[in-house]
Each structure stands twice: as C-alpha cells, then as structure tokens.
Image (cartoon, rainbow, N blue to C red; front, side, top):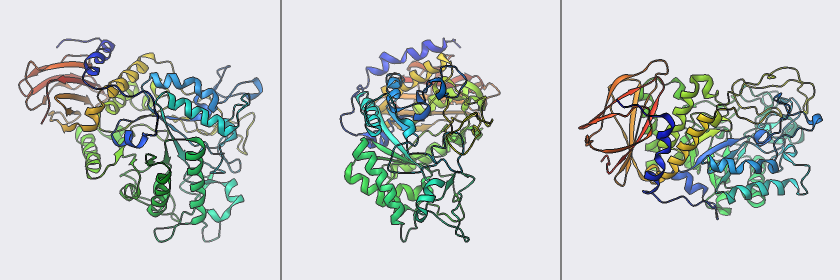
Length: 517
C-alpha cells in the first residue's frame, strides 16, 4: 500500500471539491441560522466571552487586573473574528452573557450559568476604554461577526443565582420547608419554577421573554441555545419559541438535551424528554455523540447516527456533533490528538452540525495550574479558583483558551473547509453504513449527485486494525478517488476496498463519478 504525506492529502481537497459545488455566501444579510442548521451546514464554535480574547500578559493563567491585564470583552473579541472566519466557522455559540451571581458563588468571577438577571448583559464584558454603552458594544461585536458570515446564538441559563432568589423569590421552586431548591449538585444556583404542562409560571416566562426581547430587538442575534432545556415543560418552550418566531421566523433554537438523559435535575423539578422538546419547536438537540469515548464498536456509533437520521427524516429537525462540549473532558485527555482528529472529521462528514469548544482547534487540555487553590482576590464570596479539571473555565477571570498545536489547527481548518465544499452532500446526501468485518472499524458513505464521501476509522485507540476489507457495492477498481485525509492509499477492487488503520485513525476519501444507490 502506498504511503501518503499527512498534510499534503488535506490540501488536495480544494480544487476538486470546489469545482463541483457552489461557494457559500460570505455575507449574512438576513438571519438564515435556522435554515443553515436544519440543512446540517452550521459549523459552530462555542466561546466564553469572558476568556475568548483575554490578555494574560504575564502568562500565569489568571487575569491580574491590578497589573493592567484585560479579561475578554465584546470589543477585544472583534480582533479574533477574522481568525474564526479563517478556521471555517460560520456560527458562534456564546456561553451566557447575563450577569453572574456573587453570593454562594463558585469561582472568583461567578459561574456563567448562575444568572442574577435575564434582561441585562454582564458588566464584566464591558470594555471601559470604549465610548459605547455595554449593549452597543455587544451589538457591534455581533454586527462585525455578521459581516464575516458568522451567525450568533446566545446561551440562556436554566437556573437563577442565589442573588436573584433574594431579589425575586417568587421565581423559584421551594421544598417542603420553603427553602429554594438546589438542582443536581449545582450549589451556586437555585431551580426556577417554570410551571408544568397544565399551567406555566407567568413570572418565569416573563423573565425569559425579556431575554428573548433583548437578544432579538436590542442585539440582533440569530438564535438561542437553551441550557438544560429538559428542566422546563414543553408548553413553556412552545409559547416562548412561538413568541420569538413572530419576531424572526429564522430564529434558531437549540436544546441542550439528549436521548440518553431520562431524569429530572431535581426531585422537585420537571423532566421533558428530547422528543417533546423538538415537538415544542426546538430545531435541534445535542444527541449522545459525547458517548463516543465509551463506544468501542462500529455498531454503537452507526446506530446513533441512524437514530438521528430517522428523527431528521420524520420532521425538519437536526442535531449537533456533540462529541465534545464545555461539559465534557478535553479530547486530548481522553485519547490524545488522534481522538480530536477523529472528532474533527466525523463533524465534517456526518449529517450533523459541527460543534467545537474554544481551544479545541489547538489541543487545549484545560488543565489550569491554579485550579481549586486559594485566590489572592475575588469578585464573589468564593475565595478559591473553582474549576473543573479538563474543562474550559467558566468560573474565573482566566487565560484565553488555546495551546500551540499548529498541525491540529491545520487539520481542523482543512476539515471545515472541506465540509463547506460538500454542503450539498451533507444536506441532501444518502447516508449508507458499510460493512467492515472488524468490530472496531466503522465505515460509512455520504452520496449525492454522482459523488461520494467515504469515511472509515478505527475506534480502538490502542491497537492498529490490520488488513480490513470494506464492502462497497458497485465500486470498481478504477474508481477515481481523492485522498482527503489518509496516510495509506487503499486498494480498490470490485465491490470492496482493502485498508489498514493505525490505532484511533480516521480516513476520508472523495469518490468522483460514483454514487451509492
């Protein structure tokens, strides 16, 4: 088998693929986020605005304001938009920008998900050197993103901070002793009382309605990602989504929900399964792709892909490639760079919306040396740098995410550009799982308009596959194939292909003038 240079292959995708399909419009004149998402053409990058372009000049990982260092703001975030565009990103998911609670808090800046208000923007995100008001700064960032063809979805927290409870106790669920309920183990927030399927709580609905008004009317964002969406009744979401769509019919709604989640976050709370959330108007949900780390057979991966395909074919709904999120351990801590690489190419070639966390593209492990140590100063009542090991920091004023891995960044960018070039295949193509005869080796094809994207990989991150035959009905020995991502040229013969894979390796081929029927 012929050996290929790792990165030469990725560069080879450009001309051949681009000549087949129309270019994507670079300007976002009107909101098309919902359409983009439902066609599986969104390439989403999740960011924490507080750290996105933080200026940690002394390199200690913490923003020392007394030394003149800057945390992330809407204004300095504009400087990274060209970088985001160059990586092939066309949508940003911004973690909560609502004010954070300071009482019974976690971390020295307060958790992004401990909202003390739902109709204001966090003052922590203000650039004090700008003459613009805070909301104007946020709007300017969004406008600059739109100029680059980058859509914006905002995160709405599921719960309220203790500070908000003190101000408006009527918004919250109480236990038998009339004490506000702590959901799950999230000690810095209290559970909002959204009501039930018979009657929703108008007070909580009003709070969320104000957030929607701010997002659409004041800021001009393109959609909302609903945190822990299953902790509110479907009736609540149906009315809120309907309200938003009267303002903007293309307004996107993404539910943080999974088919593998079955329990409420509190015995005092409600649980709405993912299918009821989709029925209520959400355009998509998370799925369970984050379980890839636990899947060891091809069937486990393929079955979940097929499961989500069935959902999208019965209704105009979609899913994100939730292989890694801010709630998941960094991929490099699970199975190293090969695992990140596999996530990149699965996102690029599956009928899903690509999804990544800031820092992923350069291999950040989100291991902070100061984590959970006593802080010299704090902006909350917590004097420790609370953090989750291996997960992007959402609790403190900390460094910009990222590591120095140019090879991974090159692969990340190449995969996103490739996905852009095959958007018609991703949107309209037929997904076909392929038999490999090896339990850990998966293979699938996406075919459309006389072209096929062929993907195969090894879910065993400890052992190479050896020789594996992949059955491909109708394949001929002389089928033209472009090695988009591969280090060994596969051997093609009638109806099958012989491959060899290293541990955790994934390969991608573009077959010209060939379509699986």
